[in-house]
Length: 235
Image 1: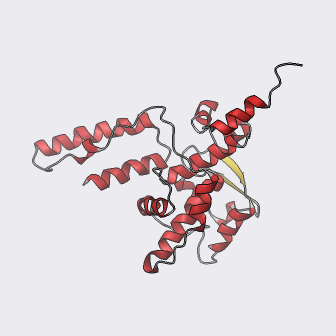
Image 2 (image 1 turned 30 degrees about the horizontal axis):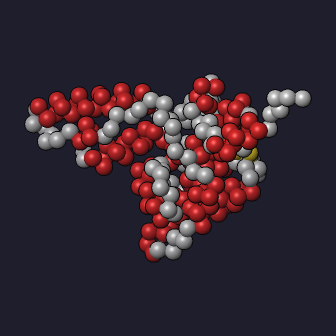
Image 3 (image 1 turned 45 degrees about the vertical axis):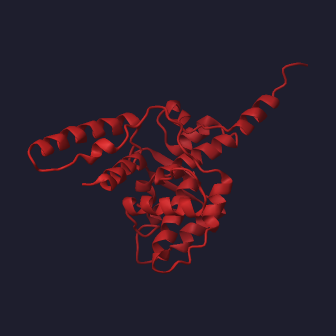
């Protein structure tokens, strides 16, 4: 269990929607357990301690439309790595377009796909949601359509996807820490920046409260300026 193992593990928790406090609790438990292993000479080093403690209320990264476009247009004609990286990119773009978590994206089946929308019960919360699909999203689904598979997309592990995304972000000149969860946050943030009502975002993302939706509402300066300038304070 080295540093990479714990880094991937905490990225996985984040992708599953575990919040900073939940991750911090698991980190603390792991550190204590591994310290006991060291005391018993079962382990030489506690790499979990090197993973920074997650901070509460940190503004999460999301991609803007230019970054999404660069990622989508990135040439991946690179030999043996091409199929896996292409699949990772498409899974991530699907998350950007729908706001779905990794666990939901990878398990969507054909019965849940209804031409121009997807209706499913979210793995984490068991809440039923309906996601309407734009033409580019339907095109992604049709690209992987197969009569031999129940799911819409082929399987690729969460760990492999997050490792791929680090490469894809760098090659796309995206200077942000990108994980699969970034796709979900991108969906919510772009909806907010396009003045979609918070109540609609809450329903589309399957949130149980408006407080949860607020974590995704990162309105940029241009949007905030337009909001103020659109209001008349005098007759």
